[in-house]
Length: 597
Image (cartoon, rainbow, N blue to C red; front, side, top):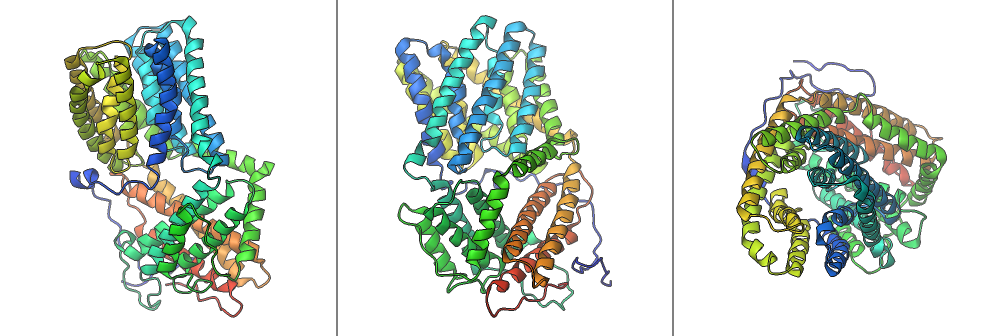
């Protein structure tokens, strides 16, 4: 077997036969394994409790707990935006509140105009599909579309009168406004908190990459086959570092006007980026030292002053480039470009559309099947089916297992706590708030563990309108969970997502263009330093998109063979080009060869 030449600018790789991807295994253990909790799990947990407690206790004081379902719709908006800088969080959470109110309005109007279960299920499925696409396109998550679907589907099957809808929506918007204040309140204490956490993650990922850079510097004359990047710890670390550094830059770009703290954070990201693109040869003394990077990350994450790294050649140029990029993003043309990018993600060729069709069909089938079996609350099945649909079929299978196990265990918890919740209305409110906190505290360990708390919280919502037979609630919830998960996953298998492979091809072409542009700036002595830095950031963003597209397509079961060799070659060539840009910052360094590996 001989090497096959390819067009200039693309690395030469050994041409290997590509076989259709096999169906992934269905082992449940990886899907149910617990992970470490998120470093910010307490933020959404505390926010949703505070945002819910004030409306809950207010309604308790006036004796109108039956209205909690409307205030809860607004209070749950406090779950969103905790990874965003406060300037962007303000806009994002405001959009979430308006989107929640819009979905609720459609549900309430529909419920007031018709009592047909068939129509209600169809509207619920359509809303779930629209909410899924919009949340994925805007990347507003977690928790993504599930909260929207839970609220709108539950409202569809509640008795409603047209004249009361404005008052109910006012409650939602009022609670949502309070949730917006709760989400932004930490800015009064720690204005750069989200940026500090994003930079700390970038430093930690860069430290892992510097400690194990992988076979980047393998002999270029060796034409032997490469192993898949997923099995290469070094490549995995580089991918994680690229994503973390890119996320840090995006967070800083969206954070608003520069402050002294943000300037220090930008300098730290320069060091993290240098350690990631060229481990062992980054700028500044000890910049690629894993222990130094981890120490900086710990100080950055803490509440004290941001550490000041040693001077790094090229830092001033890169920060000037960041300022220029920030100005472009804030300009009218930059905002138009962002809107065009969003419309492309929602356009006819969007890879999100097959997932939307899965959601629509799966939710409709789950709802109609439960209604045919006489279940009084088919919206539970709709929500269960909607919660399954992830980026690909493998992740959807994992979510089906997690949702089923969590809900089944959750109904047992509900049965145990129900007598306590019926002691008094205050006890019911306290139980609801406790499970809201527990759900957010546990869900980052694994979705099934969080579902153990979400299920009793959702069941207790019904108790605010009056007591229901425990056996009926538990039986309906178990049946809806099993039918919703089975029907939803069946729809996911029937609706294939062949656009995932097309997204990989587009990402490959974008990476090739970004790499060629970066190579031209490296080879051009007259290129400005800011131009090189901007080209490097574009290449980093394209590599992050490439990795995401490849991982998504690899989890789809029924599709054409993926160009795995080209994926691996493009990723490694991109990382070599990134490494070639780093030494240009030094006064005496020379750019290494970026030829074919």
